[in-house]
Image (cartoon, rainbow, N blue to C red):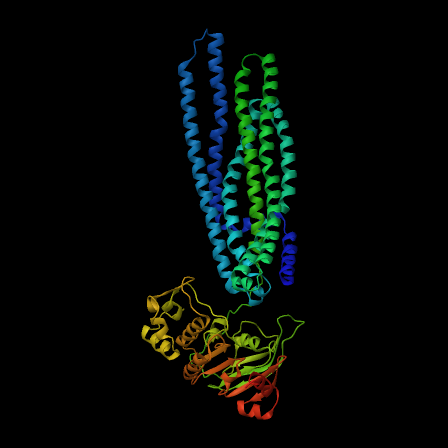
Length: 601
């Protein structure tokens, strides 16, 4: 739990460094390929706004025609002029609606494409990040950035971009038309809205930090759920349900607190702007009545127009306030997304070598030094020469550096100093994909994806024939077990099929053998099978490893008796090296490890 809290604090520090302005600038630059479409949408919005702001002036003319007919012409209204103005208004509103529709259509397409591009770039980025990134970030938090934060950015942009465009244009257009129509009443409306602007700015600045906290807490909550779900059996075994519930409740309460505060502060802006709009109506009526008293009946039309202008003026203010609220969510989420996209990548491999056409399998470790952290070195000065076709067993106490050594060999991590060579070629000069293509690897933790048994066995090896798959499965001893499943090799592997840990491990071993790589690594590959199955499996693996350089990490020392060389590691160094019988006769560290497993016998 201490590690969990520490990561949270690191994330919090990063989040606090960002600002709304910085995040939105990055998001705007990310969308630069769509600027042309957004400018086009802006042009459509301008036309739509023009049709809306002309409407009140025509209604003013219509009011004046009707009032003139009623007062000065004994009720004889000019119907032809009224009809002409009404037809013009209908045409204006139809044109405005069409242009606004296409503006919203374009902005929606753009925002959805931005979301698609974010997911695509994140997918590419995941494959470029070094493994130590995932060592220092909770998997649930990474998942939240990839899913929840990207969805928040897309949804918030969809809700805000089009509305912000049209509302901003309408606000400016109405402001201009009000001054053209009657400057004094325009100043009256502006004065009534100044209070609304001031309050909106206060609420925006107060609520932004809570939007950041919401996204941060969402990531922590997802991390907690993922951790609890993946370790569900352990949680139940130790009766830790209540403890996990309490932790969930604690995080959930924090999320609720920040979510409530952010939504409350942003939600207040709508009612405030509504009040400002209603106050504007009252102010217009009072000032309009005074002007009509002074200038006569001609101001009835002006008052009518300004009643509409007040609505048109206050409505975009409310929309802008809501859009800014959505942009706050987009800002908080995009901060986390861009933190991920800007993470330090693995060193560029441009110009590095591809895998040689033929590999013998000679491997040299030359003064290898490595630590996951510079201040904590695990592999201190490791040197070893492995000849092609040899079976090398690596043993030692927990924390000796066995798996770390294999990770360096696979180029999952870069050495701090020293070198590892395959057939005289430094793996530092080879592409990672090239190094990976030379090894088949079976880990202690099994991994099967949702798909058929056959698809799992042929994983990324589509050219392998079904016949080859059947041969390997028979050699491993799992063909009979697969045939007993409901659909044999076409059985879907998912949560509904109950495979034992040993059966899953056998499938992963078979998958590695089917890949037919020149070198093989087995990291506790037989730890999940029973003793009888282990013996049968060992025979099959020995046959599969014939002629291949192989590395076997094992705690069950009985499984590596036939290794050509056994390396005994302690604190990252080789303390003993030799064959099984020779090391036993020596009576050193290996003999102590071996005898400790058979003391009772």
